[in-house]
Each structure stands twice: as C-alpha cells, then as structure tokens.
Image (cartoon, rainbow, N blue to C red; front, side, top):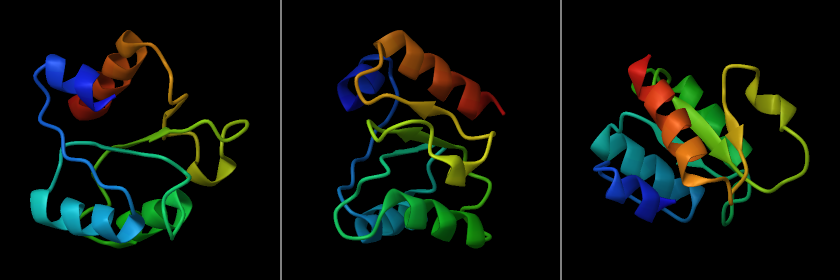
Length: 101
C-alpha cells in the first residue's frame, strides 16, 4: 500500500503499533490515516478511539484497511473499510476522497 501511495506522490509514514502510530500522528499531523484493526499490542479499534478523543487528531480522516471479517461495526458509517489486498485504484480513490473533505 505504501508503495502504491508513494508512486502517486503521497508522502507516507509507516508505524507498526498503536503507540508508534499515535506518536507519529501527533508529530506529523497527517492529512489521512490508514490503519489495520490488527496492530501489535493494542488494537486498531483502540487506536481509532484514542485519535477521535484527542482534539488535535479527531478531524483527521481515517481509512481502515484490514482482512478481519465483515465490516467492523465499531467505526461507524463514515469510515471506509478496505481489504488489505484491494486494488491500487480503490486505495487511491479512498485516500483521494478522504483528503478532499
């Protein structure tokens, strides 16, 4: 995914845990956050909850990218949920729509 985004001129930072993600988001203030429900340690569900409770990060658009079963209901209808192996054009479309808002 990061390769597809970089080839389309997006600047990409990667984290592998909830804590690393929170640190990165707080230091970089990204235009969009793409995360998996299954993170090392704390789950992506908790990451999302922490991002939404923080006034500095609550308005950053988020995209869930996972292979965990049917649509995770805990994110609500406003959060796109993509398969990890979705086609590049689907990923780029979701990111483009997210950053346009």
